[in-house]
Length: 263
Image 1 (cartoon, rainbow, N blue to C red):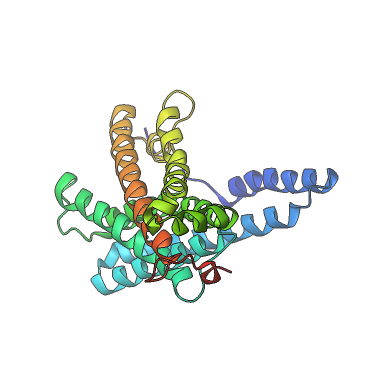
Image 2 (spheres, helix red, strand yellow; image 1 turned 60 degrees about the vertical axis):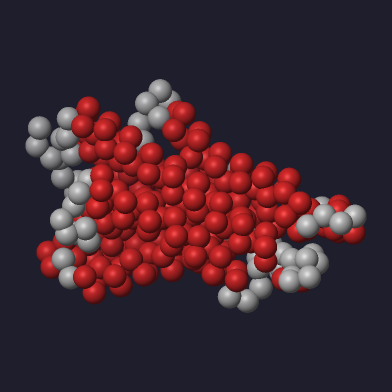
């Protein structure tokens, strides 16, 4: 089956649905029509630009340019993690916790997939590295952001209980263990739900894209399984790293609760 190319008119027709959504928000006084339109405009500009950039990367396979692209992806994902938290860590920790946890989890799992499972040679081929890392970062970013937001909000609300446990002789880990466990659970819920619903409730994005591009459905399903397993591992590792670093940051070297490190 040949690939059906989309024209500008096809995309314009689809964008009419977004305009309809914005009009519905205005009519119902939801107050999100501006955000909807800005998000649609941002996604259009960003995706078209990344399409042009990837076209050049795929043609050159230049390691320096690929590294720059990867650095930009990591930086933006880390910034999004910080902005999605109601109570953020002060200073560079607000950015650094997300960056470190995303780097450790997403990059390690992506390299494992490229070098051992898919066996790409060289491993930094952009047509494999960039899309796979993008999916890893996007999903891990969501899990990390949810977990950190849950951790900081719950610690703030339960500060009296945490300090009481510390006064009774508990270590900082014992004082916050329940909150940390709930934060980890909340960060893993999205990917667990996605895996549970895949195939029965929805066809995931990568599988749908491959089928639309003409790939055999069974091969598309295999690749989707690979991606979902990798994403679940990356999300789990990233969430654990972020929650551990974040919870440790809430206490000083004398194991005192330091909520002044949040804004």
